[in-house]
Length: 278
Ligand code: C2E
Ligand code: CA
Ligand code: CA
Ligand code: CA
Image (cartoon, rainbow, N blue to C red; front, side, top):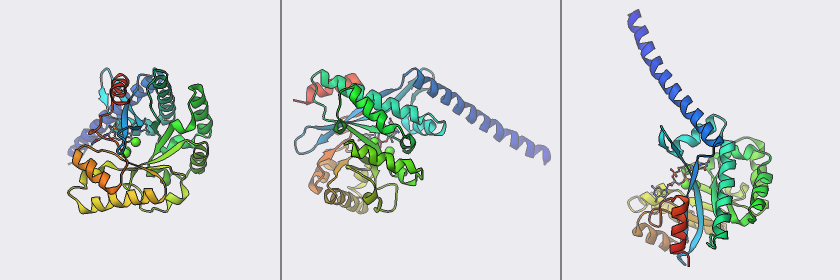
């Protein structure tokens, strides 16, 4: 029995060892990718449903590694958070988005604004507001050219500088958007405390609304909340014409999803802009 127990133990410990080694290898590779700036951003248009025009563009991080292949942000964003790289990743995403937006504008492409995803930890940085302002002015951009997408997990963050930084950023005229709205936090009271300009209806509700009355009721509720609070509401994950029509009937004015375009590499996004924007 004793020998048996030991072999079980070593079996699991080998497996854990292998997982730990894989994780460490991925962490080392991510650190390197950030240093060498080999991560990229893909861009997904947000469409004004009434005018058909571009409302803005969301920047989404991508990582292609020579041996690991394409690593999903669902994997490397949490990893970056765990190993202290998320600050660096956030700064890179801000900088690269601003650089790209400015380059498109110089090329005569009319891109109204860019949205960048930030993690709660990014708001621990007391220099964030200054960093953003420096980056904006370096690229001759205005605060309203930039929207920061945050998630309801910022509310679980007890770091006192988070709310302060959010207020600072908002006071500068930079947009603040609540991503994945409706999935995370159980109370709506935070809508009074956070200086939000935009709500993004989570794609799970869009996905389910045609077949699930509760999901449909929630899409209804979210647009009413947004209207009452004078916030922009973006429906994400719109994949079909039927979803688009249902959302429009409910009053949604801005949408994002595969129906319009997948997230695109910079050159593809540029082609899309030339084809689509008058
Ligand atoms: P998110 O911010 O909620 O981004 C939307 C996700 O939905 C993206 O996945 C996008 O590719 C995908 N998507 C877009 N349209 C559709 C659609 O019509 N149908 C479906 N099913 N999906 C659609 P992605 O690019 O894999 O990103 C996953 C998550 O990783 C993001 O979710 C965001 O939370 C995080 N992320 C990505 N880039 C960054 C970044 O630069 N910084 C931080 N902190 N997080 C990031
Ligand atoms: Ca987002
Ligand atoms: Ca989302
Ligand atoms: Ca998300």
